[in-house]
Every structure is written in structure tokens, then in C-alpha cells.
Length: 509
Picture 1 (tube, one colour):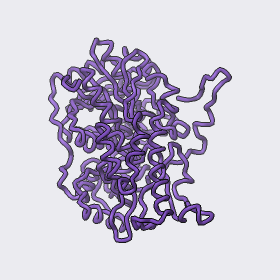
Picture 2 (tube, rainbow, N blue to C red; picture 1 turned 30 degrees about the horizontal axis):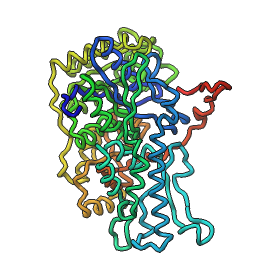
Picture 3 (cartoon, rainbow, N blue to C red; picture 1 turned 120 degrees about the vertical axis):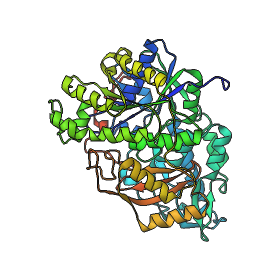
């Protein structure tokens, strides 16, 4: 397979998510199905859903309507057990760390400088900050501990960026879990944890093959969130798909300010991928929401609100064009959309050198995506990709953060909490400043304030925390109030999920 030429790589991304819905995964699936209807050899490469959001506010991630991957219930729940393996490997490392401290602490680990966190694939806010080791002397050393959701864990990132078992073990071994009393990093290799973690991940490293409702192959593997992690499916899955198909459709999480930026600046940089085109998903409803219309009123025609809110789409177009990749904008169609609204968006896109197509894949499956597929094919034929990353490796970490903040978010600048400044210096002193930056930021706004819709101006990005994921090979900058362990909403989706006597699951979408 390795001698096979690579197919064309198409990224599907979107405007900032709103309660009105955008339909990025639905569009990805429908586009793959549409390629099949046109007789093209296409494979879809997607992320696995996280259990947490399935029972929380977001729901599942299998697409929707007649543009779905199946089996939907299995995919949204335990699937192949990949996430459980990642959780187990993560928590094995945590257990070995605490055991090492309990058994004499030969490495001289400073318990005030432990940076490794436990994880769980569930939204559970009470685990953000915990105390462990309470009880007798035999129950371990008392210390503050923390949990992140599994999809935000470094091992999830490592699994998604590793090329093979050798690379996986190399990355696992580099994980920094703590620092000694004299400030030296302690790694998973130092704790002799690498082999056992790799054994747990042996099968999870293998991509999973399923299909769409119209039998288009879908390789679904890995699932990091794009607001708190790098938001892309595994490199192995994408590269496998590129060898199997002439056209590969993949997606990156949330809006293009998060998922697409990390796809380009982390995944493509690390894996030497060269994307050929980008599909940018929007809806009339979401654009009107960005223009200040309440969710309950989005069905009404409102050209003025559309004109006001389309600046969000405009900024994402500008951002994507900075990477040198041709852009196709698609409107995920709703029955409430009017011709005057759709025509306005189409004209707006053409004025910005973007191709445009309506997508009706939710209602019609692959048939509803043929216009989009033809537009993508035309773009691939007529427009050459001149892909380039946003920043170079040799910039300082502060310069990388500020480049993203100014160029992608539209910020005036960046402020740093004292602890973040201190950590940036430590990471630089360790010789790791050549890493790319993974920004943790709200998905709902281009800024770090989720209430600022549209195209905010006159704001700064506040970096409150920084840490290095040495195994994954990037530095995480946590901004605003974003949490790496989400909580459940007042009325979780779990309330509506059930299973009958025959084992049929309901309420899981």
C-alpha cells in the first residue's frame, strides 16, 4: 500500500458553532456519499465521538438524517473500546506515579509539581479538582489531583499523531509527569511505564473501518476535542485513507478558528500532509444567530441580520485563505431558508474568490450533496493548493501564540497570567520551544469570551495556563474560562436515553 499514490485530501470545517446547528459531520458524510454517486473512489476519515457529550449537551457525532455513519449507537457509545484503552493507559501512568512516590520516591519527585492528570471519558465537573491519598499512611501521599476528559488527554493526542508502534512508544516515553525538587522533568520512561501503556494501546492504535448509510467506507479513529485538544482524527487513519481512495474527506472539530487551525498547524505539520481543498460549512440560521437573532426567531427571513452575522463567515474565509488552500463554502440547507438569503450568501462568497454550493445531504443523502461534490471536483481541477503553515517552528512560543491570536482570532494582542509566563520560560529552557502551539479556547466565539459573536474587534486573548505535551509534541495554551473537564448541563441528554427489553437504544442522536 505504501507505494500507492495519495488521493486528494479535503478538509471539512465550519463557522463557529451556534445553538442553531451547522452540520459539519453531516456534510462530511454526505459529501463522501455524493462522491460515490458520481462514481468516484472516496473514503471518509472521522473522529470517534466522546461519551461525555453524548450524555451532555452535544449529543452524538455520527452525522444526521440520510448522511450518517453506521452503526450509530455503537459508534456513539463504546465502539471498539479505543477510548477505554486510552483512559486505562492514562490512569495506569497516574497509578505508577503515585506508587513510586509511596514506595520511597527514588526519583525525588516534588509532589507540588506533579503535572500528570487522571482522565475519564465523561463530563464530570466535580473531578476537576480533587484530593487523593486521604486515609491511612498505606493509602498514599495526600496531594491535590485533577481529572481531564479522555479526549483532552495527552495520550489521546499521542495515539492520533503516532505513525506506528515504535513511534507510539517513543512518544509515550517522553510524557512529562512531574518535576523533581531541583526542577528536572520526570518522564513515563523514568517511571518504567512505557511498555505497559503501549500494551494497553496495542489494538487501539489500529484504525476502525465502518460505513455510511450508502456504503461509503469510513475510517473512524481517535477523537480529541478541538476546543481543548488538537481536534483531528488519527494520522494513521488519514494516511490509510489516502492510500485507499482518490478522494479523502476528513474533518476537524468545531469552528475553523480551532479545528482547521490545528489541522493545518499541528497535524499537517507533524504528518507532512498537504491538503488540496477546504469545505467551509455554514447555515443561514447560524449566520442570523451571529447577527443577533434569537434562536426562536431563526426561521423568519431576516436579510439585515444575515448581513450583520455573515462577518463570522467572512473571517473564517480569510483565515483559511492564509494557508493557501482553495475554499468551497457550503450552506447546509434548511426548509426555512429563503432564496433571497441563499443568493446573498452565494454572491458574498463569489466576491471573496470562494466557490459556493448548497448542501441537502441531511434530507437527501448523497443525492443532496452532488452539487457540492461537483463544486469540490471543479475546485480541485482548476485551483492548485499552495499549502503553508501559519508560523515557523523557530519562532518563540509567545510569538506563535500571538500569531494565532492576531491572525486567526483577530485579537489586538495577548496577556499572560504570571504562572503562564513562568511556564513558557521553563518550556523554553528545556529546549521545547520549537513545538507548535495548541490553543485551548471557547468554540463559540473567535475571541476567548463565548458571548462575543460575529467578528469581534478590540479584544485581547488572556492565557491563564500553559503546559507542554512533550509526547504529543505541542505546547497547550489555555485561554479565558475554558475547562479541560466539561460539566453536564441542567437537563443532560442522558435524561432522554433508554434501552428497551429487546436491547434497542433510543434517544441517542
